Length: 52
Image (cartoon, rainbow, N blue to C red; front, side, top):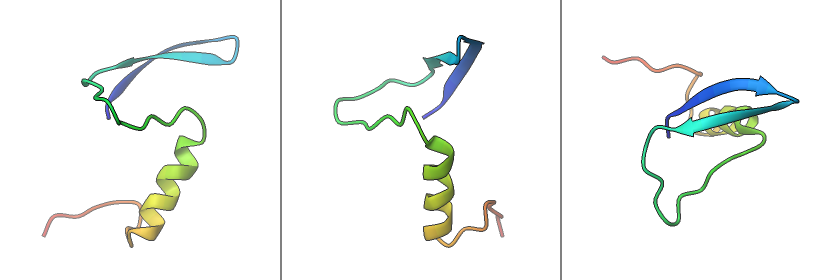
């Protein structure tokens, strides 16, 4: 899901969701970097993709 990050203030950052959120969608609010890293590692990706 694509978001637009706002200006940080008092340790928080407001984000604007650029896509429609549907019932049942899961939103990560903490640890997103670690979650993405784990998903890339378990999917066999090396952190980047190539088109062949």
